[in-house]
Structure formats: structure tokens, C-alpha cells
Length: 113
Length: 112
Image (cartoon, each protein chain N blue to C red):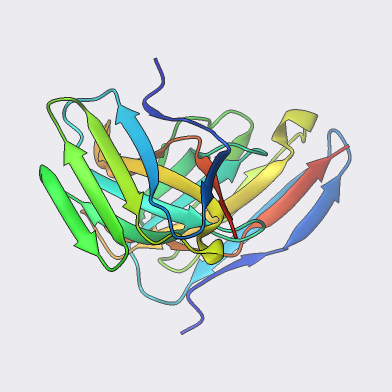
């Protein structure tokens, strides 16, 4: 099992550009999450999904969109990139309800200039 | 008031000493509590989980939970330079069991 895979690992965007951060997991986990981590800070929840076709907002959803068409994939879309979205983005998953260990991807470092 | 609050440090501890990391949370209905370790440039990794009041020990790590005081701590005994990392406190059950809310993390440095 590869676990949780995120692509790309690094990306530089210009203000106003759009991009999609990819996240896929091969563990058949139902719950998936997107977090962002600003320098020297903890993780902030952007969006999460409890299964295919079901998504919900976290603490900091503005400027982002998600979709969950399959159990495996949970892409995060940035429509109009802003400098405030410069951050490290982590995708994570758990098997089902009742959080125990979060399985994290390796992260995507995004800079918006 | 922040939902999950930690002293951001940095916390400097000599090798072999006990490192004590603290965390407070604001929501009394919180049910599950976790400590994650994050090395620079890496993803967080779970090192301890605790669900009921009292102490839970795993090797050199001890998690302590006091729900009445809304307080959770992590003790690291016989600290090693490899323990130098950022430690993130995380709490679930806040605004729904499916969400895990993180503190800002405490940066710990173990000095040889």
C-alpha cells in the first residue's frame, strides 16, 4: 500500500492563477481531510469528507473547493490564488468514524507570488 | 480564546531530562486527545492518544488528561536529541467527532 499520496510536492503560483492539489489513498478509508499549515503554526482544517459524494467545510474553507467522486480521491481546488494561501497543505485519511490515527500524505508546499 | 492552545516555545531541555509539554482546550465535550510529533519538513506522526482521565504510558512517553481542568500534557522521560521536533496537541469531538482540531504546536529542542 502506498498510503496517502499527494501531488505535486512543490508549486509556485502567480496571484490569480488556479490549480488543483491532488490526494489519493489506497487504504479504502472513508474519511478524508485537507489541512493547511502556515509557518510555525498548527494545522487548520480546510475541508473534509466522510465518503464519496459528501463534503463539508472546516475552519478555513474560503478560497478553496473540494469534490469527492470516488473513495480514493479528494482533490483540493484553488480558484484565484492569493498570497494568503501560501502554506503547506496536508491531506489525511482515517478508516471511519471515531478518529484515531490520522494517515497523512507527505504534503504540498505552495507559494503564491 | 483559542480552541486548542499550546505554548509555542521554543522549549529547551538538556539531554536525559524530562520534557513537559502542555495543552489546554476550550470545548468540554471533547472526547479524544492526541499528541503528534512533526520533524521539520515532514508530516505529523501520532505518538500518543488518550481518551480518559489519568495517565497513559508508552515507553518514554506519558500522556496525562484532566477533563475537569480541560488540560492534557505530554511528558518525555530521558529526553534524546532525536526528540527535538514540534509537538502538536490535537482534540476531537469538538464540533463533531469527525473533526480533529490542532494546537499551534510546541517546538522542543533537546540539548546534548
